Image (cartoon, rainbow, N blue to C red; front, side):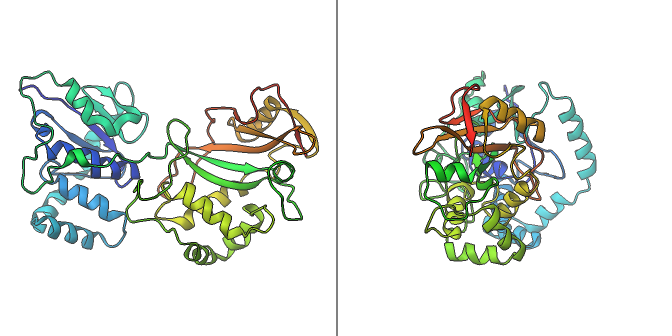
Length: 385
């Protein structure tokens, strides 16, 4: 019998992997696609997975439960009881002593991939990487299979597994990168908003935005977009209490992430940014880390980003100045003065890859597009009021 060989390289408990294992991968075993597939989960990084095919539902359960936190022992016990598995067998599978040897083997595999591994998760079907379309790998399994056996795609092969795979909801977008949105208050207050005084004369945070692979904002959490489990904190009072639990952060927020609009509270702005851009991000279970990370990024940057207030630049000049400062190309947003209609430098976006396990971002990366808002050309003249 002919087999397909999708290989999946991943870091355990990353949110992309949670979605892949919890929703996409399980389709293989909820049909008889597994009868034509040689499927292997290959740990990349500090992770181990054994007895994969035998205990995929257990792996899926632990991925879901891990987002809730708690001791590993309790997590294993809950999943083994839920699935009626022998806990001793699971423990033996994990502690058989092959971890080091297998990690060496997996490291050798990832080092010799062609084309080279670019990201995690890294899904390969018949030696062809799927890159950002990895969650649709079942589609590639079906279309690439050339054997005689035609697997049923909607019929479950075990009474322990749900047969309704065609009713599974479409999976939400996963953050591909982040934008730190910085606004120049004198421009915002001269163009789009009536502001409190005094108006800050340094770049302040508008938000830190989770973007998908097409540079579109990841949709916020809601009834039609259940992107995280457990549900993210959506209550304004609870968010305020959480932010106040970090006294240093609570002092920094009004200065570096203020609500500029007259008559509006800072917490309203912060809550809006969290619900819109944080609830389906890597920070969804960790709202405090979301705000701490944004403040830390802003603290690490020059207050005026190397620009001189009350000066005139072209868009390209602004981009070049910022590039020399941070080593990456920003995205520039222009607005118009409400009275004179002169183009102003309204906002600037600094792009970052997804954060690491400690919720910290690395160095900035090039943004995919230089222009945003009313900017349309590198030669456009803009003012920094």
